[in-house]
Length: 487
Image (cartoon, rainbow, N blue to C red; front, side, top):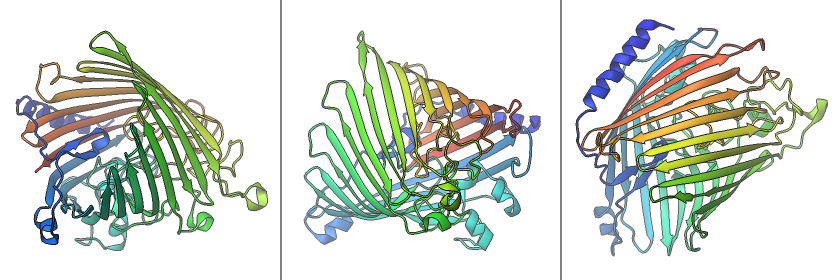
C-alpha cells in the first residue's frame, strides 16, 4: 500500500470527524434521505384549481453535493491503476402542483470535476468508484457541457396522473424496486424512460408495474439500451453481462417490471417480483421477512429472498451458442456456457433494539450462470452486499455481519451514526472469469455538520486471496468523503 496516501485520507477523515462534534439538529426540510441515498418527499405541492396556480404553487427541491474518491490497489496490474476522482455540483427538482390529478416533475443534475483531485484523461478507463461523477464517453469524444469532465443532464422529466391511491407516470423517472434503483450515492441518479404505475388501492399492498424502453446510468449523458453492453455508450454498468452485446441482443430492448409488496399479516412483509427483457431473460423474486418482538424494545427479524433467472435467448451449442453464462466474457468452467438459467438464495437475521442494529446475512448463487443485474437493484443488497461488491457470480457464497449504532438515538452524540460490515466472499476458483476470494471491511460514518448539511465518510478495505487459482490479487483500499446540503 502507499502509506502516504493512507495517511492523507486518514487526515481528511479525522478532520471531518473533528467537525462532526458539533450538535446541530439535521433538518432535511422537504425531503428525507433513506437507505442507499434514496429520496422520500416529506412535503409535496397541494392540489390547485387553475393552470397558472399549477406552476406558481409548485415546489423546488434543491441539493448541493460533493464527492471525493481515492482507490489504492495493493498491486497495480494492467488496468488496475490507483485512481481518484471528485464530483462537485447538485440538483434542482421542480414539481408542479396537481391540477385535476395531473402534475409534472423535472430534475436537472450537474457534476463537475475539479482538476485538483482526478485522473488524467488518458487514465479514466481505470477510474473505479469515482467514474460515476463524469462521463467517460464525453472525455473520449470531447463532448459534454464543458467539452470534457462536465456532466449536466435532465435526470428526471415525467408527467404524472394521480387517481385515488394510484399514480401513473410517463417519461424519464426514478423507479425503486428489487430490480431497479436510483442508487443515488454519487452525483446523478440512475433513471429509466417509459411508463410506470404504482398503486396502493389494495389494502396493505403496494403494486408497481413498469414498461421501460431505455435506461440512463449515472455517468451517461443520454439514455441507452436497458441490457446491451458496449463500453461507455450503451449499458456499461459495473454489473452488466459483457457477453450481451448489440450483436447478440440488439439495441432495442425493453424492460418490464412487476412488483407487489404486502403486509396484511401482522409483522410479516411479503414481496413478489418479476422482470422481463423479451427474448433475452426473465427473472422472478420471492421474499419474506417476519418480525418477532422480544420484550418491549427488541426484535428479531428473519428474512429470506429467492431469485430465479431464466434464459430467453434460446441459443445453445457450438453452432448457435453465445457463451453468455459469465458476465466477464469468460465462460470457462460453467455448467452450460450458453445459458442464462440460474438462481440465488439469500437469508438473514436482524436484531434491532433502540440505537443498535445487527444483521447476519448469507447468500449462495447456483453453479449455473451469473445473475444479470445492470439496473442498480443489487440481487444480494440488504443481505450480503458490501460497498462496491458484486457477489452474484455463479457458485459464489457470501457471509456478512453488519452492525450499526445510532449515537443520536442513544443520546450520546446528536445526529451521528456508524455502520460497519464484514463480508467473507467465496468465489469459484475453477472459473477464471470470476474474481478471487476476498474479505471486505466496509465502514460508514455519518454526521450532521449543520442545519441541512450531512457529511459521510466511507471506507472499504478489501483483502483478496487468489490462492493457487492463478487469479489476480484484487486487494485494495477505497476511501470516500461525501457532503450533501438540501434546501
